Length: 409
Ligand SMILES: Nc1nc2c(c(=O)[nH]1)N[C@H]1C(S)=C(S)[C@@H](COP(=O)(O)O)O[C@H]1N2
Ligand SMILES: [Mo]
Image 1: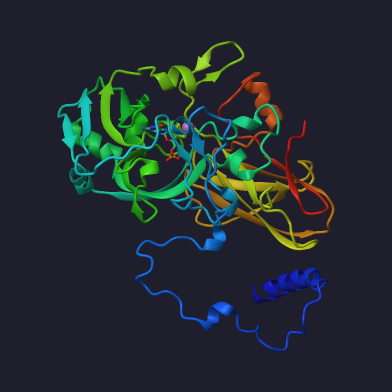
Image 2: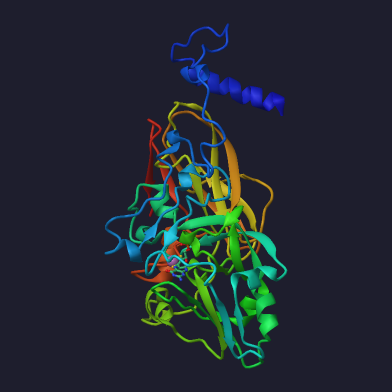
């Protein structure tokens, strides 16, 4: 391993040596910041990023919605080093703005076709046996702008309706078993306490499987942006069903065909019919370095290509990377642990000769499903699709190292 890193170091230096650098015979001169004492531990009771990281922020597209209260901000995936999305980076999707809930006043009602309706305080919920699990959360509109053509020259805007966090809470099945779901109760209607009062229909089998009612996110309380104090996590399914500021779980015969299910979050098929319950995020991957925001800046030589892959149906089996627009593929290395319905990191070492590239990543999940091309997706989804764009992304790398979002026919 040492030998490998020395070899890579050698390659790196070959590129850097072109710039006149002084001979390496002494340590670097003292920097100005090492000549003064820094602030003490009383300076920042809640930490924040370095001021040199000011560019690593959520962003939104001003023309996308009429109001920022019914809009989305995007995760800066280009600045996310691993699989966990920092809470301050996590994309936001609001239908009625961000809600501020007083945890002392908070109540969760479980009613409908149950033996024992429940009205739980936050403390009540936290008394149940709990679990911590890491899952991705992707809005089905992720990549929507890219359906007709390559539009956003940006990883953040083409893929940033995505986040991944360690969630802590109680399994939904624990709460539902406490209430006692009756045989006639086939669906669950979770409802949010925001101005949108968002509701979605969920089949009871999924609710009893791996869904969670969570209060913890990456080592702290859930953020208000993500539904403080309580949200629903529905692993692998479209982000829209993961109701935030959760206030009610109604069990019934369902489904209810809520506003979300009859308008926004449906897919129009070529036949003119719409699918209300396409719920799983199929396997998808993207290269996060290089990307339009993070090009090759140091000329030819060694680079590690890096990316993320995920599937709503389980674990990632493998990721293949192409440098020539999908003609040839090379298997990438997956980083452990490979968790179900969770972002998985992949890397591939690469010696760039300075010639233009067409970079792609293509993942296959444990069910054997392989990520399709945009042309294949268009064929099966008709003329004006909006949701579930899980197609292979192409990054065009030019000789100057810059990177563009392109689509190959
Ligand atoms: N109560 C409520 N829950 C909600 C929403 C909302 O507007 N209100 N937006 C949904 C949508 S469309 C998505 S994609 C996810 C986004 O979760 P995030 O904002 O934590 O990223 O929350 C879902 N849950
Ligand atoms: Mo969404």
